[in-house]
Length: 107
Image (cartoon, rainbow, N blue to C red; front, side, top):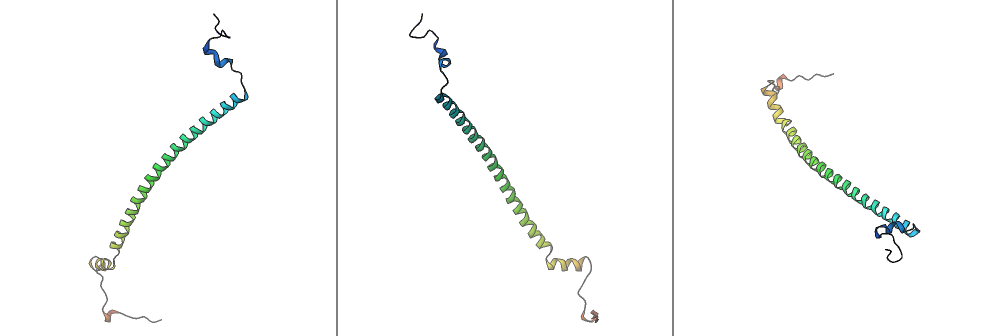
């Protein structure tokens, strides 16, 4: 039943190999390549997540800038001197004094 020099089945060929320095070096290099590939995958995933967050923050920044500009326009409209003078005369019944109603107080 023996064919060739060995009677062991062909599926047992890895068991016949003796550990050598070259085999150990190949195993170490294989593990290092797999580790580097996993690190590249993890870094790419992390980078994509960070980029998505950056885009979201930039959109939020743009919205806040728009809102800030609108608030500045609203503030300038509410604090215009003509509006203040009109409100003072309408609501508080204030008016500019006549020249003979002004008194100068000297120290």
